Length: 327
Image (cartoon, helix red, strand yellow):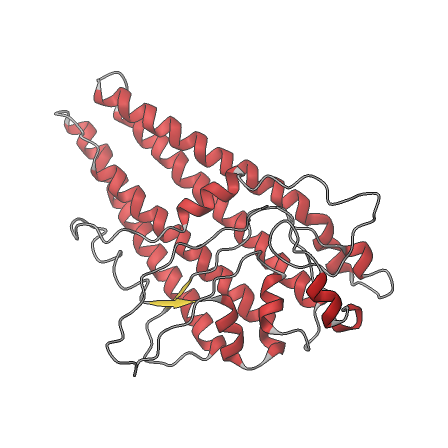
């Protein structure tokens, strides 16, 4: 997927020209017109491994039966959906856009880690150790570590959420926010040469432009590692159930899944923080919040909470967050 970057008002076409402009492949509208000889090119493949892994990581946890060590984690954390555009609008200060956008992606990364921490604990709780006391002891170590990881992920998520609450100035009595917009997992087109053809760029911005392709490559590779580790874990579990592998092989495979998932989140977070920094360098304060958001992700969520005073108002069901598409 290729995201179109918006130029500051100095480069914006007239409203009439903009109305005639066709959307880019990912749904955004670019003010950068590609050379005629180049054409639009083939649409990017958005069914990437990274996009698929991210989609699963940010799916809301099922309410499910409230049993086991993960009980309680599935409830309440989605009580306050917050789109990125609402976060920016609520602050009332466009100079804080970078801080808010980066805080938003940190919370999103925290939700991915929480999701996978719950899954990891539940996966271990389903393993039957057999009659050997050694196997029971090995599994007990892994379970205790998974409970600690889940508790740590809760604490880290709360810290990130509070940072976002303070920046956005959400009411103190509101539940902690759930970021419904998903970070970008596809490639990002900066249009650097066009945007900075007549204006200077700092060394930091030049570095971001050079790093983004490599960071996206790393993101795809980490996603592939997550998928491969999950496959290896399933095979190890099946063999252990048949008595063909020791429990240590299952625990090692489990650790590999957890490790690759956390590395994926780390790269995803760094990738989107850099994109936000680049967009902030491109857009001046006159660019509206919704257009700024479209510089970061292709398809922002159109979400507005229902007024509390509305008659018979009920909280809307959590939407399935659409991913950027190439069509």
